[in-house]
Image (cartoon, rainbow, N blue to C red; front, side, top):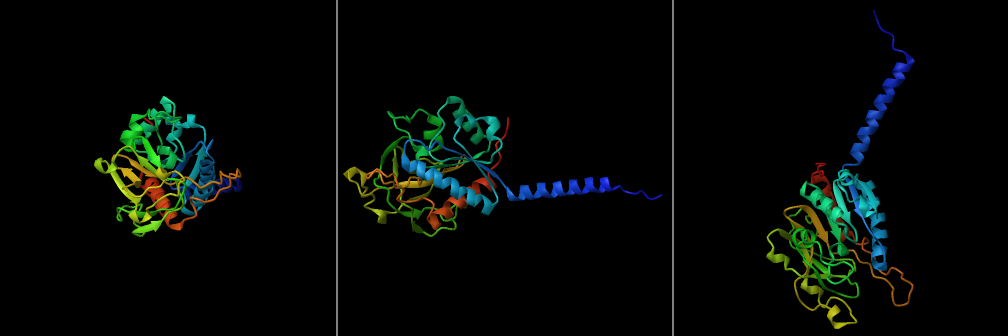
Length: 284
């Protein structure tokens, strides 16, 4: 005896099928999830850069099928919140509260991935951002405190130190960066076996910076600008400081970080490496 399927049953089956297909499509479109923490206060150069970063990463998320969320609420740096994401970005600062720092350390040690930009590595005692987080600055980043910087923000010739790494394999041997304020660090990364330097400032860049103070112009030295720590799924990028018209008081943006196709290739390849290869952080 044949069974007659009612119109309501057919509609229910079709709804379930459509929901299933939509779920699969959503999963395909969002291969991994990124959360960008930011502060974007006080320094107009960092504010300009963060606004630019949000636009660029959102466009890249649509193009490369990942989800990009942002938050300026650092209290979200907790275990429950972080387990939703495969990659954490620090766009301009770092967590300050002890519980936030511990949540981030556990996230990384349990398989999470991270990319930090420019000021995210800054620490100087005494300052508003003292070096009071040993694990992060000395062990995770390996750079220690900030020592000095170039001024004004200027383009540098960057040299790829490792052409075989997933983040650099699509880059030329050298390329011109976007204008940036370049940092020098307390610790020598070449002496740390955990640190893998991917890009450095090529000597053809010197003199680097325009001053006006003489110490703001570099004439020699070795300066890593992109590196990773072999013990973690992470990447630090020194870029992330736009040039600003401070002098006339307009605070107009004079240069942009994400208008450089080669540099953008580096950042996007790095994010895809972290997101697709990184493990999701565990909830326990």
